Length: 146
Image (cartoon, rainbow, N blue to C red; front, side, top):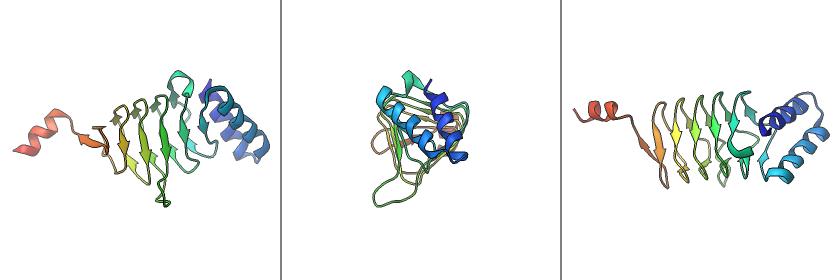
């Protein structure tokens, strides 16, 4: 349901129906505490797990197709403003993760629960911890050691 509301808000912003877009955003806040801006560039098939409870997405962020966003995730900027995250395709963002600043997340990345991402993450790897550390697939680690 939350994905449909997000895309409805995006439609309203594109067609200069700001009042209606604001109403949709307020409805999302009231029903599931999700502050997902319709101005953010969110692909059509992005999934918000458990109704997007507690998710915050900055209006200048972008999220690629096939991405799964878990509850209580923050995708936003840092203070002072250092840009907003650009998330690739088929990314999994774990519960409570924070993706902050002008970071670029590659395709097919997994971000662990409660991770704090403040630097770029290349494609096809995982990131865990505070601040997030990059874990490469095992075959890439073996190649790097040789």
